Image (spheres, rainbow, N blue to C red):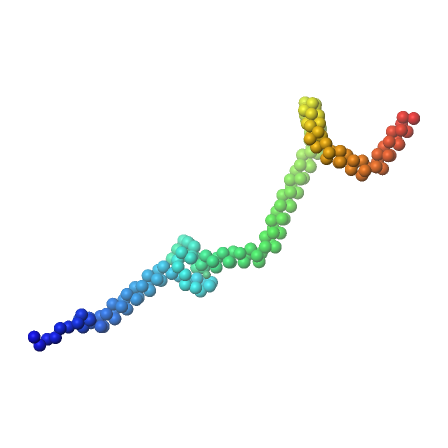
Length: 171
Ligand SMILES: [Zn+2]
C-alpha cells in the first residue's frame, strides 16, 4: 500500500477549472448584456425595464432611458412654453372671433324673426316670468333693495332730468 490517499482537490485539473470559470463569466456577461443596456444620454448601464419599448429599435427598446426621455420632454416644454402658450391663445382667439361674428351675423340676419320669437315667448310665459321675478325678489330682498339704492345713487342726474321733463310735460 505504497500509494497515499489523495485529497479531493488533488483530482481537480486546475486548467480545466479556470476554463470553466471563464466560460461561466462570459456567459454571465452575455446574460447581463441581454438584460441591461447603456443609455445614450446619461451613459448609465440600466436594466432593460428602465427603457421604454420601441419596435423600431433592434432590441425593441428606446435608446434613451425613461428618466432621460421624460427629462427631454419636460425640457422641450419649458424651452418652448412661451411658443406653446402663444399658439394655444392664438387658436382660442381665432375661434372666439369666428364664433362671435357668427352670432352677430345670425342676429343681424334674423332680427325680425328673433324679435317675434322673444315676444311670443314672453306672452306665453308672462305669468311664470312675473312669478319667477317676484320669487327671486323675495328670496333676495335685501340684495335687490341694496342694488336698487346703488342704481339710484349712480343715476341721480339722469333721474332728476327725467323727473324735470316729466313735470314739464304735465304742466
Ligand atoms: Zn438615461
